[in-house]
Image 1 (tube, helix red, strand yellow):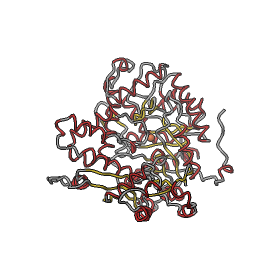
Image 2 (cartoon, helix red, strand yellow):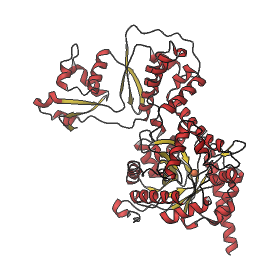
Image 3 (cartoon, chains in turn purple, red):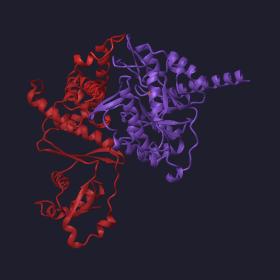
Image 4 (tube, chains in turn green, cyan):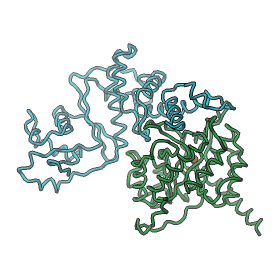
Length: 294
Length: 261
Ligand SMILES: [Fe+2]
């Protein structure tokens, strides 16, 4: 049976303020600037895999980041869709970070990344079948037991379609998050990539989202390869993705949003500018919503 | 094997080995992106990540071998040594072993026998950069060891320290090939073997040339030689050498019998 969140009394930590606003993914080229200038960023997302092995932030930097900013963890190694058993050692390392710092939540992806120990270093899709759903549900439940709280799972960009698939992506996602009783992270760029590459119906996807379970939104840029687009995280957010975000934020007002940029990483100001565009979309949408209600 | 397990097995193997297995391709829908392209997008993602990783770890090898040949070797490496760690920072440690084999088999690499030692240097420089441990030697516990137990002391080397020897001038080759300006320097083999170590000092990787005796002591410590045996090494005064090794932080701890300290 899934255990609810470990109480904060047990951890002896104060309950952190809820996260809100538009944050950015913390990347190594910006660490020194962020630590020295302490720019006003509502929250930061750390790539968990960089900090559970040698090579992450040095402890003093990690402590300073966690003391000054609300922080979430984003991992790529849980391989939640894999038929391999959940990697307990990996999860325990993530848990250690949570024990040592104030971490608001952990997110990973609706995909598998490894099989039989061999790593793909990519987010690999699975067919949308009952067998895949059950695999995700079992693994997410196990991960939540160890993590001690609900985790967020993210929709992935997909370049492969399986004959075996029996349902749409959004029906597949809904079934998993409902049966695993977990939260959802909606990556708008991934949705757009799947729309272009596989004709996923974005309106259907957004209208069927389990809004109460959506706790975070991701925004990123893609790369155009002619006959397909790639979720490359190396560009500004595209106009089409901003439009989808505007649509999404209407049904998910005040959902914490994050700018992801992993390749050809620009100056921090560029990321902060992207964050401010997202902020202004949120404010405009909220103002409009208030006007309509009044 | 369940159908999902089989599919995941085939998917990963087709990506890692860059194969287009027809059985796997027949599982894929023919739509806007044809099945072969669907698979090749993932194949290219992995080989791109591996190339990028190895380029960052081995900049001097890349500069010497040239991009095309280096990428061919990356591709071969990916097939021979699939990644078993989710952190790509830990990928590439057998590259020197592969280069050793390549140098003995590939006529293109005649005269490049130093590549193995150079790759080893680059790997340890990379891992030293990512090494996290800053351990201080516990002098208090050390001073309390009874005299009759002191011969049984086994020292531990700092996790970030690696010890190297080469008959090639690999340090010069490395330095000349890690700057952006191409160099046409001729390299001469040193008269004697070169001894050096790489370690983390103030969180920064540092390379230091050492003498033969220091190399010998560090290697013996690495091999878990006890203090009594170290004291009997010919032409080495361990009492003189130890303070220096401790001061540099190269020795980070000790154990006594089965107790780690
Ligand atoms: Fe994302």
